Length: 205
Length: 82
Image (cartoon, rainbow over all chains, first blue to last red; front, side):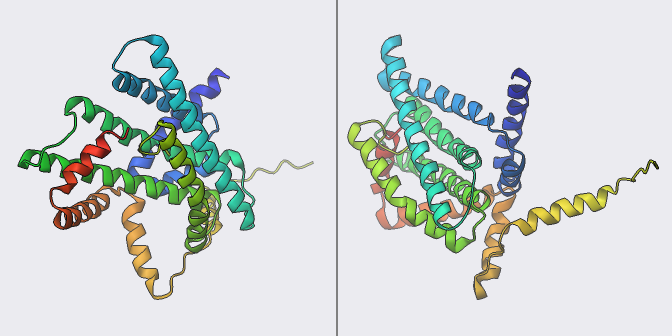
C-alpha cells in the first residue's frame, strides 16, 4: 500500500512535469502506464487549493467555517468531475468505443492541473492586487498580462482535454468534436447550477 | 530437454513498442488541411508554451483593439470568479 503510494507519487510528479513540457508523449504514457492512485495526489492538490481559497474568500480563521466552505467546494468540484467522466464514457460507448472508467478518470484528472493553476493564480493576484482594475495605463497593462496568462492556461487545458479524448477513447478529430458537442449541455447545466448555488462563478472543471 | 536462451534484441523491441503505440490511434485526415493540422499539432506536442503565448497575445491584442478599456472591467469580473 505504502510502496504503491510512493510509486504513484513519483509517477504523478513525472507526469505533472511531463504535461508542462511534452503533453502529447506524457498523455500517451499516462494512458499506457498511469496508476489509478495518482488521482489521490491530484485530489490532494485540489483539496489544498480549496483550503487556501477558503481562507481568501471567507477572510476569517474560524476552522468550522473554513472546513465547511472547503468541503462544499471540493464536493462540488467532485460532482463536476463525475458528470464529465460519466458523459465521456457514455458518449464514447455510444460511438462504439469500449473504454475503462478508470483510464478516462485518470486522464481527465490531469486536466484539473491547469484548472488549479489558473484558480491559484487568480486567488493570489486577488490578494496581491485586489480588483477592480483602473483604466490607467498600469491597470490596462496588468489586465492585458492577466488575460494573456489566463488564455495560455486555457489553451493548455484545451490541449489536455483534447488528448484525454484522443487517447482515452482513441477517436479521430471529427468524433472528438461530436463528443465535445454532446457533453456541452452537461457542462452548461452543471456550470449554471454551480453559479445559481453560489459555489463557482467560473466553473472548476 | 534443451535449454534455449534467446538474446534480447532491444532496438527491435523498442521499435515494435513504438510502432504499436503509433498505430493504435486512427490517423487524422483532413484532406487538403492535413498539413495545416500536422503543423499546428507539431508545435503543441512538445514545449507548447511559445505557441500558446503567440495565440494568446494575438487574441488578447484583438480583444483590446475592439473593446478598448472594457477589458479592465472583464478582468475585474474574472478576478472575482475564483
